[in-house]
Length: 88
Image (cartoon, rainbow, N blue to C red; front, top):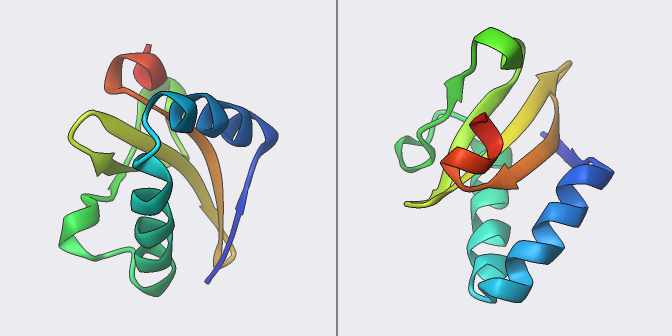
């Protein structure tokens, strides 16, 4: 499955990696897994509702979430941050 990222995601990702350098390796592995199987239990992929209806999310680490859009077998990473940052 093709995976791309939005400019907003890229900007947030840069900020997070500066604070937590280990996130880079974790995200790379998680994105590979997402591309292979969105159903992998370790990802905890779930559909969002409310103002984020139409988007999906997965856990990157205990305190980090990634929001993405999934259309026509293409995943676009939209946002990354803590639960409070991305769901407020």
